[in-house]
Image (cartoon, rainbow, N blue to C red):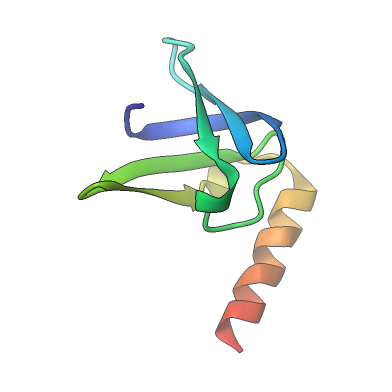
Length: 81
């Protein structure tokens, strides 16, 4: 897997199918438990590596799903409390 921005194509019980947003069209699977937010199909996520661990971030500006924005907003509020 390469660092970059990916679109969530499908979610299984434990894995997420990611497709690169670049022209390469590469696809990868990523563990669902390793996401830092509640991921949904259609989300855009940024993935990068720090040391040996992969990190994820919800790419708010590239995600067009209203429900994903709402879930992320609620999660941020709950995390702040």
